[in-house]
Length: 153
Image (tube, rainbow, N blue to C red):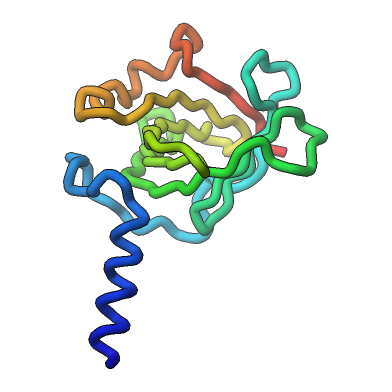
């Protein structure tokens, strides 16, 4: 009976991912509960479709259309794929995210400034490994149409 329950749990958890992790060439790492990316990030001056993002330490990401909104515009499940620091001391994260109700997952590249007060990101819908190749530091630029920047609240 215990084996059967364990098998059901494993199959359930495996079913949560619509793209097998083996499709990624990156090694997963186990994030701590104190990663610098966690928290509420805002940008009331952005032309983007959301002004506030809340990244929870259990893998939930909530976006809000306006800084003052109390109900999220969208919810996403986040899996962290990689983390590293650059020469300036900024912390980078590469994540796989699935928006609630969406079919296609999204890859994100985040950069948290050394002082932990600024978050920059780009994203790309994940259709193939070619999309994964776009998630590199050189592409994190305000020239990128998928670029966003926020300040820690």
